[in-house]
Amino acid sequence: MPENVLAAAGAFTLQQGEAVVVAVDVATEKPADSDGVNIFLGIRLTCTDPSGATVGTAGGTENLLTGVPVVLGNQVLLRAAADGIFHCEVFLNAPNDEGASAGTTFTLDTSWAVTPVDGLAVQTPAVERLPMTIPAGERRMTFAEVVPLSELAEGSLQMHASLNLTTCTGVGGSREDGRTWCAQDDIDTSGSTYEIETRLDLVGDDGAVCGAIDASRQSLHLEHYRHHQLLHVDRYVEIPAEACGDRVRVSVLLDNTGPASLVVHRENSSMITTETQVPRPGQA
Image (cartoon, rainbow, N blue to C red):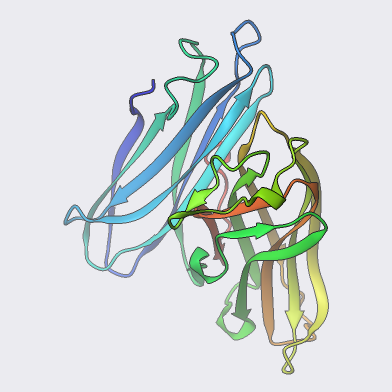
C-alpha cells in the first residue's frame, strides 16, 4: 500500500432472474508496536456481469487505531438480467500515502461470500436520503424500506445495513457531490457520540406504526483520530402470525449527541432486506 491490493476474487454462474447477496468483511487492526496514531484503510468490492459491465459496488474507509480490532463490512444485491458468469473482486488500499503510519506492516483477514436469495430481496437506494449531516442533538432516519406482508412467503426478514460515517472534527474528509458536508459550525475536535437504532415495525392501513417486531440500539463514539467509520448492523426476525398491520417498515436511525456533527455518506452506505437469511461471510 498505498497501491490497490487485490485481496480476493472469484466467479459464479447465475440464471436470468436469480438474485444473490455478495458480502465482504475485512478484519484487521493497527499493530501495537507501530508508529503514529492511525492507518487510513479503504476496502472496495466490485462485481461485473457477463458483458463486463459493473453491476454492483460496495466499500468504505476507516482510520485504524493502535490495538483496536475492527471489521469493515458491506454488501451488494445482484439480480441477473441474463444467464452467465459474474465476477467479483475485493481491493484494499491505504488512500493517504503520507499517513502517520506510513511503512507499517499489518495483517488483514478478508472474507467474502455469495448467498442465493429466494423470495423478496431489495436494496434500498441510498440516494433517497443520503448524504446527510446530523447536527448534535438531532435524530435522523438514514434508511427506510416498507415491505408488504403479502409479498412474504416464509414470514421472516433479514436486514443488513452499512453506514459510511465521518465525524466533523474538521472539514476534511466530508466531501461528496462536489461539496463538504461539515460546515464550520459543525466542527468539534471531541468527535461524535451517537446511537444507532435498527427497527422493524408493523404499519397499518393509515400509514402509522401499530406494533414493533424488533428494535436494537447501540451507543458508539467516533473520535478525532478515527474520523471515518464503516459501521455494519444486521437483524433477522420472524414476523408474528397475528400482525396488526399489512406492512413492515425496516429502518435505520442515528441519534447524534455530539458535540461534533456526523455525516452519513451516500457512497458506500447500503441497506439490503431479504426474505432469505443471509449470514456474514465468516459465518457462511
